[in-house]
Length: 98
Image (cartoon, rainbow, N blue to C red; front, side, top):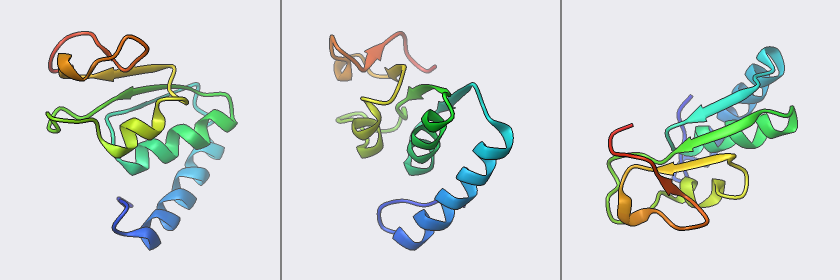
């Protein structure tokens, strides 16, 4: 189920669905292109030792997404798709349109 900060009740259901999936699959790496469900997956995935790759969405040009700002301490690789959003300590820019 998709969810965001404007649908907190859906975030609860989404979190339970992702927790069940992660407990079943036990991923070694989680790759997300942004949004709240990806952030939840990375946070829960870290509990089972999964590495995390975050690619902030291409559509937001002026600033990072809220999820992109929150995931920074948890992502092993943190990328943005606009060079002016990159910072020396991350997120990093490695090319356009990944």
